Image (tube, rainbow, N blue to C red; front, side, top):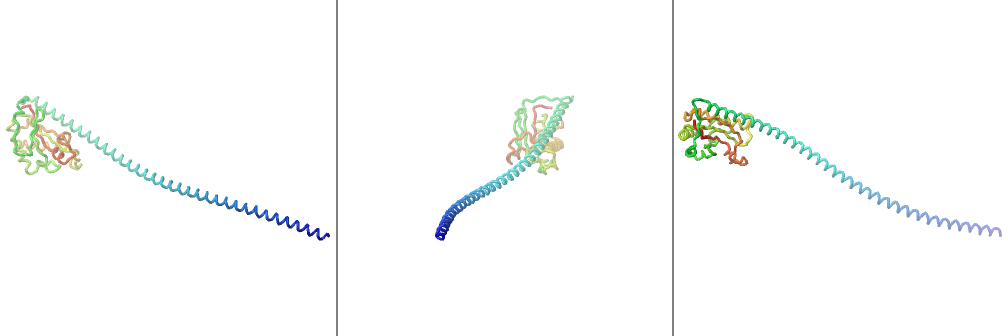
Length: 272
């Protein structure tokens, strides 16, 4: 009897143990599946975070490239600004020198006129009939025009000088002799200014400091040749260098620059 009871007890304990094991197995299985799901979710989050990191890294690389380009452009603009400042300083200095040269020429012209007026042997009087007696030239490149009460005889610089020098061309002296003869015939007693004009083209610094110097050198050369011809008297003449201050045409075109490089005989209404 006792053996049967013990057998029954053992069977009961075994059944309970088996039932507990089965329940624990289901619980462990559920926990394992839950852990796997959590691991899968974490893996997806990791992939998303890595994708965001890659995108941010690409954005950062693009921003670094744009920053480098911006710095490069800024450096280029700074260099260009420095060059423009130097050019502006050069132009300002050149304008100051031109203004000084202009004032000096005007003072010389005023002094010459005052000296001529003070001279007892010279009397300057206006000639109202001047415009009715225009000179005639067979050379079509020599132009005559009225400028208020002044008559201007224009000669292209290329007909007289070799390039950007003050050296006369071989046929330049003969041309000036013919012009002087006609001016002497038409205006034997008039005050005549010999004016030099250039265009706005920069000059080689080894030759001339600026266009005013070249224009003045042209006018002086013509003055000396005209005196040598003996057609016009020294007291009739004076010299002015205008540089590029009085263009006839725009210097934006080759034709305009060519026209602006010239010598002008300015015949004034005052007679001597």
